[in-house]
Figure 1 (cartoon, rainbow, N blue to C red):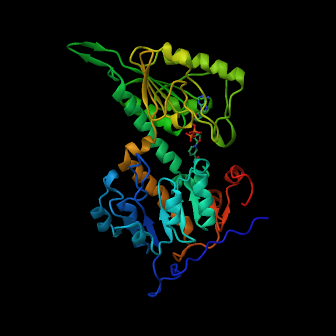
Figure 2: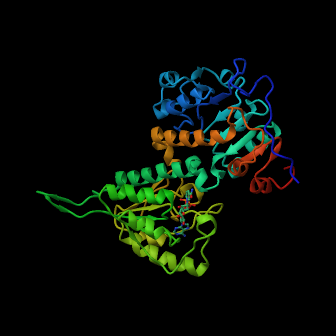
Figure 3: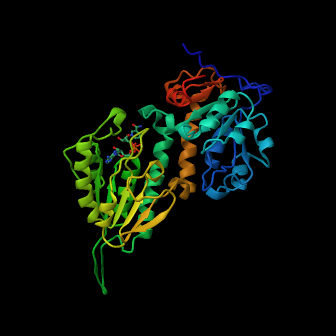
Length: 403
Ligand SMILES: NC(=O)c1ccc[n+]([C@@H]2O[C@H](COP(=O)([O-])OP(=O)(O)OC[C@H]3O[C@@H](n4cnc5c(N)ncnc54)[C@H](O)[C@@H]3O)[C@@H](O)[C@H]2O)c1
C-alpha cells in the first residue's frame, strides 16, 4: 500500500494558516522559461492581480514575460515583485509555476518540499523526474489533469491545443501559394482553396474554424464518428468511413491493419484534392498514426501544403521532419514544434487561467495549502511527491524500482 499523500512543510516558510497579521503569505515564483523557442509564461498580470488579492506573494523573474509581451512593469502594476536572479526568485517560494518541465539544473535550485506545477512531459524527462523524487520536490503535471467536466477550466492540454490548431491554419495559409477565400474581382474569379483537416479533436476543430473564417472550403476526418457532428456544426464536410474507433475516455483507439489500409485509401483521395492539409491525429501514449504516405504526397497538387501537428510524436505524414519545412514532389511539408509558443500572448493568458483554477484546489477555505492531495484532480496529476514517483506509467518507465 502506498503511503498517504501529505503536503510537506518547508523550513522557514509558514503557510497562511489564518488571516491573522503574523502569517506570511504563500510565495508563488514564476521563472523565465529557458527552453529553446519557448515564448510563453505561466502567469499573466490579470492572474497576478487575483492571486495577490487572495493573499499570495507573486514573484516574477526579470523579463520572464518579455517574449509574450507582458513586461515587468505590467506585472508590478498587478502587484507582483520582480526578482533579478533565480536565488531571489526562489528564496522561500512554496509554489513554482512553469510552462515547460524543469531541467535537472533547475530542479537543483529548488528547496525540498517546493511544489512545481506545469507540463512535465515525464516520458521524455525521466532524469528530471528522478531528481525531483530524490530532492523531495512535489510536481503536478498539468497534462495529467483528467478530462472531466469539473477540470475543464484547468485543461491546459485543450487550451494549448486550441492555440496550436489556430496557428496550424495560419501557417498553412501563410505558406500556401493561393488565396483561401473565393474572390470575384475585375481581374477574374478565384476559386476558394480546399483545406483538409485530419483528426478533429481540440486542435483539429480550431483549425477547421480558423480555415472556415479565412474563407476556405473545409473537409475533415476523424476515426471517432462522434467528431462528425462537431465538424458539421462548424460548417465543414465530414468524411465518413466504415470505421468508428472511439476508445477509452473519448480518445481514439489504434486501428487494426485492415482498418488502416481502408483509412489510407480514403485519406489519399482527399489529400490529393486539397490545397492545405492539417494533420492532428494522435493516440494518447502511442506514436502518431501514419495517415499520409510518400506515395500520397506524390499525388498532391503543386504548391500544396501539409502542416503536421503530430510532428513531435512521429508525424502523421511519412515525409515530415520535426522542426523543419521540406519540399517533396512539389508539396511543402511543415513539421512545426511547439506551435502554441508562436502565439504566446494568448497561449500564456489561457495557460495562466488554467493554472489559476488548478491552484484553487491546492488551498483550503482559509487560504492555507491543503495537506492531503486526495482531490481526484490533484491525485491524478501528482507526478512526484515525498520522495516517490506517484504516476504509475512513469514509475514503470523507470523500471518499477524505487517508487
Ligand atoms: N473536458 C473534456 O471533457 C474534454 C476536454 C478535451 C478533450 N475532450 C475530448 O477528448 C477527445 C480527444 O481530444 P484531443 O484533441 O486531446 O485528442 P488527441 O490530441 O489525442 O487526438 C487528436 C484527434 O486525432 C484523432 N485520431 C486518432 N487517430 C486517428 C486516425 N487514425 N485518423 C484520424 N483521426 C485520428 C482522435 O480521435 C482525436 O480527435 C475529443 O473527444 C475531445 O472532445 C474532452
